[in-house]
Length: 357
Image 1: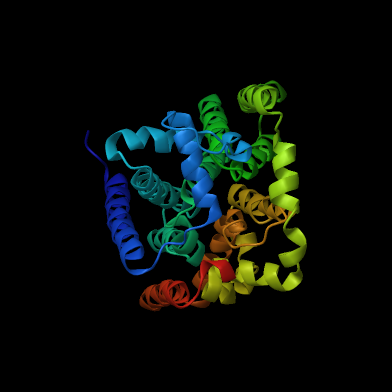
Image 2: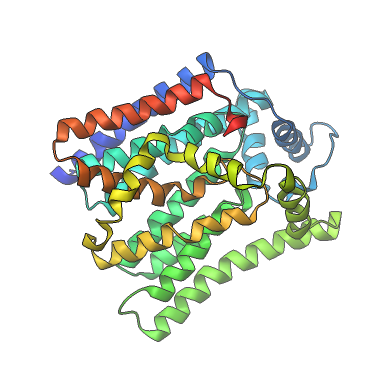
């Protein structure tokens, strides 16, 4: 297959970012300590539960999301070590999300080279991604399914098709079986069908049926299995995991600090972006409004952390980049500023602690 010039440029950018992602991953795990948590123990024990290798503790709230431990169990066939299988999974999803981030921001910014590179760089090398994504957590996989769902939604808004709806239904369903973040992408996909321009009523109803039929049927089926066997539901998990620890940190100071960690220096350019939104085409404007509103439902989860709030990152990053593009005209200065933003992210990672942000 012969690539045209536009796809050759895309391929080269993906290769560059994949190489940078590989470097970032190995520098992170070798020179910045990983963060063992109680969460990590439950992930490993649940993977062992699915593998049937022993009889560990059963964590019902992990079984609610079976895809991550199942993948770890599968990779353990090759590594013969659950800890290595877990980190291999993180590495694989980091490479996958690298590709998706490039095509996502390229789609939004209409193939603009700098804006695409800036979006991918700010998303892939942010403090939460480096601190939590490349760590003993399951965030990278959750963010992968979430961002892929957003990409499919954006493609749908630009050119609605049944294939895109089917693809999004599968991605959103798998994502929810992996991590809660995908519920945000699923909601945005539904709203996109509702707000899609020039869509016949019959097609709109059909697309709603496809997206929700797959998502609801699969998840209710799995929820029923877990409930019948263990008497446990997502509602129980929300009460235990989402609300129990909320009072200690759920206040304005902690919330503000965690949101600040998402962009850090990039926040300085968000106000300027507010003057550029009206210059976007109608589809991008509509999509951006969804991105900067719907993801804030993450505040309904009682925990406070930049990793929990990172579902807001795609919209916030777009705003920051629009601000940079408005303030600076010189392309050289833009790349210098982008490098500075990434450097600040790295310094915060090296000097700080993921628990503080």
